[in-house]
Length: 393
Image (cartoon, helix red, strand yellow):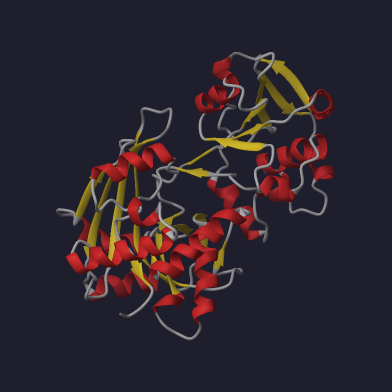
């Protein structure tokens, strides 16, 4: 989420900004440099090991991208025991890219610390976990910071044994759905097995948020493609005409309505003509044929249908191409996507609806993983609020 320019700004703000460790630069071994920096912070007292068991209540006050509506999302930071993926325990919801996994593993080996929390969802219709911590998150927060996007992050240190036990009991049998941080979780699994035995390395830092939380929102990630030769451009046009009803729209209508109950609708524009269109799937049976053998929730997933009909069938991309971003890119908002087209960095863009949280849950419950970047949970969790040491020393 942080590009080189933003990293440089953050690094210049403070010698103790977390990017010095989480996004290390320079030297023959940047990962060793990150570990040395973190150990130096501990010697200086800038980072202090928590002496007592604690949960960390988190509240994020934000305005959603493109909206003037104020929202608040609540959760808490804790350690969760690492397990294999499986029903009733921990589930992924997206396929991952191999590059970030290797980078995070090398950093974990060097620092022996979880630096960034994994964002996971759980069902808590009665609000038992939240209510157990609420009395301890009513006064002055332990930490209070507003990020560059205007989101206010507040944390409260909860050490009351009864509150901790109540939160543990409320979630003892809960299934956790990873919303953001698949690479970090898979890294944690690999690292735990590398070390072997029991110990702190068998746990990973997570932020747990209830599926029922009113501040939980999901936004789309739009797709961009490049390398369209005249032949591939024609194949794309043929595929669009075969599967979609095409209607020209204004640029303000490029991003489809977030109402997920209607037929699949995509926005589309190419860099050459720059005429915006709405593409509506002609018949759900088209998706059923393209995704034969997949579960019903997966066949109704916008990103899966786009991947099958357009990226794979029309443009000939493989899973490996998609994983390594060969000819494919992503944008978090329409303005960013249009800017990339206008600068000639991509040849065409597809604009998607957000994936409803319940659809994310249904696909995961069916034992399937969505295409990469099927969801964009906002706001992001900050790195640097708390760390999770993976050793006792």
